[in-house]
Length: 222
Length: 222
Image (tube, rainbow over all chains, first blue to last red; front, side):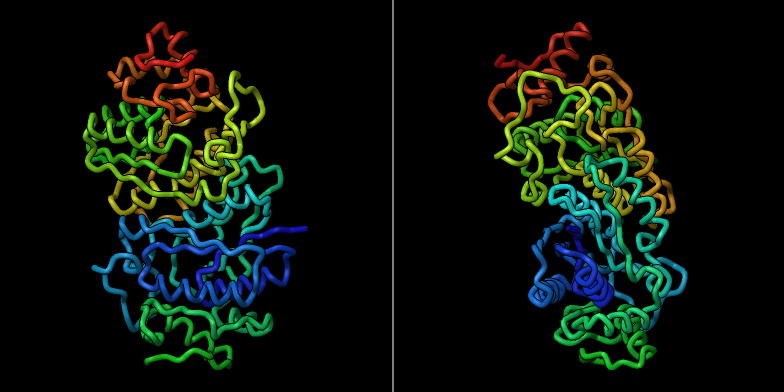
């Protein structure tokens, strides 16, 4: 019997990653973080809806408010505006949250040790995305060495990144194949009733659905 | 100007590490975790006393109660008794807290990125200690690669481990040299008024002072 933990933010990429895990693993555990992000409530509602939909063995929410207290990102510091209207190119955008994926993975690894899970699924996207350093394969490979050297687990714990090298439109197509409930996901950087359609995350999602030739089931303001 | 973060639990090893950082760095930041450990209140009081003593640029306490919620260690799960009366040899003891140092270091790295600190001091001890996997040099070396690949920081962020290869008695001697206030530290795994003197952590500390030929300023029940 295999046990896996899936990091589920409630966005499109983690939704498709969860759909993938559910199709591959005997017992799936969902893990979500509240870290004072602008969309905390939205993400939490999506996480709850996805947990309700997929019925994982357990769904855990961890509170990391300190991450917004230290600030340093437009997603956690209300004094830094979220950029609108463009998809960033080479520079790491101000929406980068310091070391976020490492922080989330560490919690997942600790939990994995206790429940004897051997896989941690994370929906990071390397190329066709925002250019966050902690979304790159080289980071995940390094992280697996930290797991191998820093845990007591007898079984290896691996990081599984099903969408890492996919384009956003391929992720949409993969989700459609896996019958992922896209209507329950939220990608926008704002927490309005309706997705803004102009932040980088909305632009990436809209382009993905357009290129995949699929109609995005969620409405947009713009 | 150099800025450094020191992980300060309130125990002997982290105290001497803090003393070392204070002697080497322009601006020191103290970081402490409440994670539902048996000695949470004791450690917090020691941390406050040490912050009062050393007056770091900032002293931050992060709340990680989820770590005791997942359990898996005698230090966080009240159903697992803390072993008494012996210093463990080769096996990783039940007091190991899953992936704890990785979890703490990740938070320190995120904070370092925001405040532009370039060093993170941690008082891990490899040989003359409990055999925790996340206290080994190989783990810290791997972790530095994760920092290098997963952060946006332009300056490298290094992990400094001043006591890693020291024996416990050498740590005592180093602390004496640096005028570390040992009377403000707490090493015991229990949260009684007086240190038990029989848990592994007390045994290691008592032996260290004995071998160093120094009188430990804190009292013991046994």
